[in-house]
Image 1 (cartoon, helix red, strand yellow):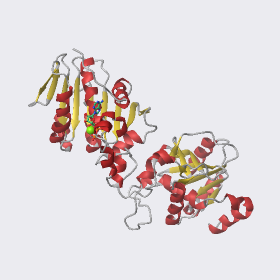
Image 2 (cartoon, helix red, strand yellow; image 1 turned 30 degrees about the horizontal axis):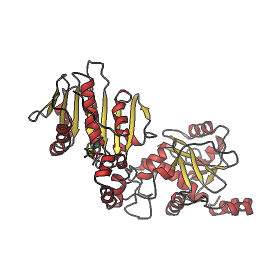
Image 3 (cartoon, protein in one colour; image 1 turned 45 degrees about the vertical axis):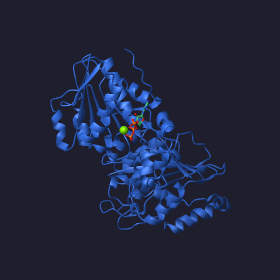
Image 4 (tube, helix red, strand yellow; image 1 turned 60 degrees about the horizontal axis):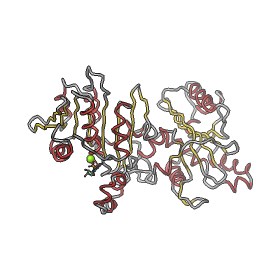
Length: 442
Ligand SMILES: Nc1ncnc2c1ncn2[C@@H]1O[C@H](COP(=O)(O)OP(=O)(O)OP(=O)(O)O)[C@@H](O)[C@H]1O
Ligand SMILES: [Mg+2]
């Protein structure tokens, strides 16, 4: 018997990843072929590894029956596969099995308490909680030498959006394997345009997605993970604001801006090119550092790449009761002279929004004035997650305090360094610096 399945490149990449990564997410636009890719992968695995055991899950039984079970019955060759409706289990002639499961409630996962699987698959992973995912991950075990993996597919959005984003998208460049705590994770982004059959047979599908609300359209058509309800930096687009790292030319002006506390040191090195485009090119994001350790870490990381100005928030000039010295004075003692930024929050956010706003550049291309190197992962993770403050619609809310550190540092930089100031700088650089001093009260 010979069955031919035609696969799109991303589906093939998903299938090929079982032996390379421990956890894989195939995620993004609706209709890209993610669920179909899961089922083809499950079929190929079952055939290649006789007596293998797989579990494939949707959140609810009706979803499972209407999607995965129905499609698998059409896709899996009847000569080698038999499905038992009462047990929700499919069996192959070579002894491999696929269990079709669901998890209506948190406690449903305990139904799998004594089970063992070689591959566990979640379809629509963002419908599940992290606790469910982690519990089921413990069921991944066996005595055979088959490759074991957690393989998931999903759209952005849904109750699990944040944890799934944190686990797979925020870890670094898509399409590459990232090792985290000894575990290899891979994110494969899906786009609807890859699904040639769908594009050909239903050309109006994309038109219908375009008619969705802004948030739904970005999630389901663009496969965008960075949009959320009440997003403050709604101008954020990963493809516009994140760029590949490059060597910063020697003559570009360099700045360092930070938000410091024991809970987090978030520091950013920012370079500005001759056209007033700024690049966030290095990041330090570490908790639990006392001042001497923070200063040492900053100086070590930058080496000879010394910025012109180190920018920090004004509360660092408050005197401490124990030493009588301010945090700023202590940083100076450890070799870092600080420049006091304004802490007018709303003004600062407006400045930062100006920098992030895409505008037509000198070559006619639409680009923001501020871009971020792809290796500055914490700011890329947290900045798009910020939402409006429910009490002050001009401000950023700090419902999740951890999300604000990186943005605060960039805000201090943006408010201390007005945009398009090059002409003025060239006119009288010294006077301009003095003006900053007067405005910010040093
Ligand atoms: N390689 C393929 N060959 C033929 N048809 C395919 C292929 N991949 C996907 N399809 C078909 O395209 C349609 C959309 O695919 P699928 O349901 O897998 O997309 P999805 O990414 O899971 O979408 P959603 O995000 O809505 O769940 C389905 O009808 C599916 O059968
Ligand atoms: Mg699907």
